[in-house]
Amino acid sequence: MRLFVGIIGRLVFWAGLIFIVGQSALVSYLQTDYGTLIIKIIFFPATYLIWPWYSGLWPILIISLLGYWVSTFIGNIGSVE
Picture 1: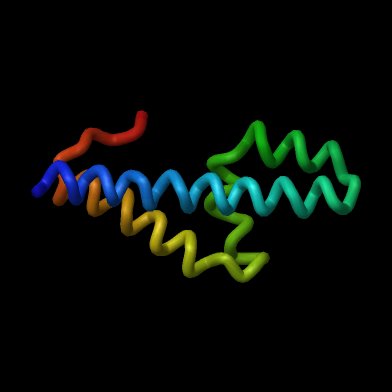
Picture 2: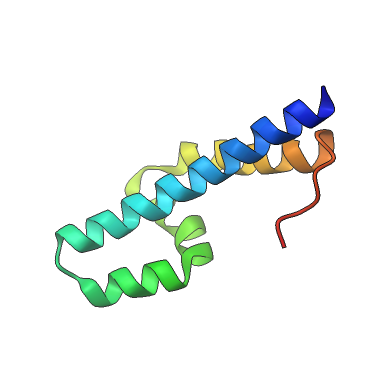
């Protein structure tokens, strides 16, 4: 059961990360701001933590971070380093 909780929590984390960074990159692409697009993809950890506060995606960020901590502490899955 702990492994199942850990896997679901980690899936929630990765889905949130991909959604937030992808949405940020899509906005830059649609604005034809290719320099910012490349910077957002290269520095995706900063994009993941900063972009949601300006775009209104902060609930997804919080759910994603909670999924990470649930998978680490309840599911006993190692950290993502």
